[in-house]
Length: 178
Image (cartoon, rainbow, N blue to C red; front, side, top):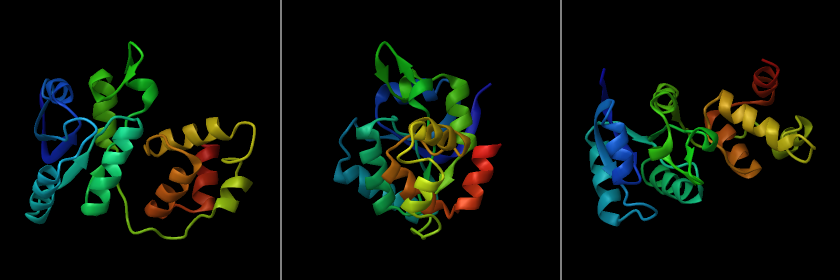
């Protein structure tokens, strides 16, 4: 069954659209891989200003993160769906086009909307929680990122995203213990 999505979904390429349109009825806009032409960004701004929501679903890699940041900066109301690199890998390649239907639908059910950066958590608190500087820090970060559907990134990226979501130390403790 094809699921109807009212938001506009931004992806990196044609193969992403081919896969997604096999089970989603939605409007898609592609960024043409690692580039994000000014015309495409202007079109996204126009769509957002008309009242339609934008969902960014880019590859879980550095170019996908770059595109995500550009869109977030230009369209602060954009929403974000993250897929795990572990669930989107095939033949040593990673991307939306390599993810399965279940992974993508789960990402779209757990959309994140970032707010202006708040200071709800500090770098020191991430150290105290063992998310930085500890032997198992990376594994703990990945666990936390997957629980709140944040996508993977560096400790610095995690700190920024947690603050953009308004998540504090107590909430992180609760998530890590669940």
